[in-house]
Length: 322
Image (cartoon, rainbow, N blue to C red; front, side, top):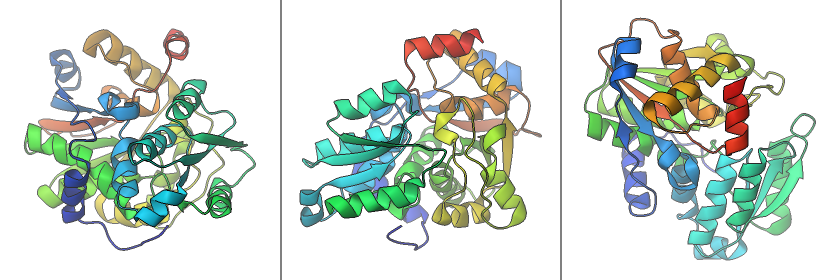
């Protein structure tokens, strides 16, 4: 982590200006079927339509584009299970530099292939025995590269917050915002934007049951580590919240809901059959919590972030058939 200063609404607005014309302004979808199912007006910010298929490009490009010419000449390093890997690889290509990405050996092959397709060099490790932070920092040092972590960086957090900023600009004031939680960058940035615009909004994070590190940490008042989660939501298989993200989320996140892998599958099916969109497991957790009834006292108008859609046809079919 290169900077621990707080992230504010102005940082998110600055990030929006920085990524304008490079990142997509993704659509906000509505569904009468979904509204009737949950009893509220739901506005879905669809980051599965973002470049690289996930919100991660926002933060990666915001951070990478602020590196000095000298830093860019040496290249960029990152570590990720897939979506941040692709985001940094594409950002590096757009900025005319190279990227070296550390990825777990069991990362989805579609994400590995996409990362390589953007021109990155991939180094693998065992996520269940290796410390990716330490390995990633050593990798960056070895190559003399700037390291852009997947969430614990102010420019990354601010970039991710532009998704919520756009959502509220389009949908108007919302009573609640529901956001998937992995390392905490998306919800930290989203909560910063949402509460900066409308202080009374309720911000709700969603984790898989097996990966409830943020929920435990918020309840304990300190960062709690858990065993590496085994869940279909690979993008949320995080064992401890980020240091900077947790400091933001402690202040701004109101509650965390948990969903099972079966409930994630149900959400993926609903999105496919009713909304006609494809969502990866990590991208479906917020929707899963909503349709499973895990969020009490829903306000009349709810915003929800679909964080990504990076999944190949075979894996999607296998999960939806289970």
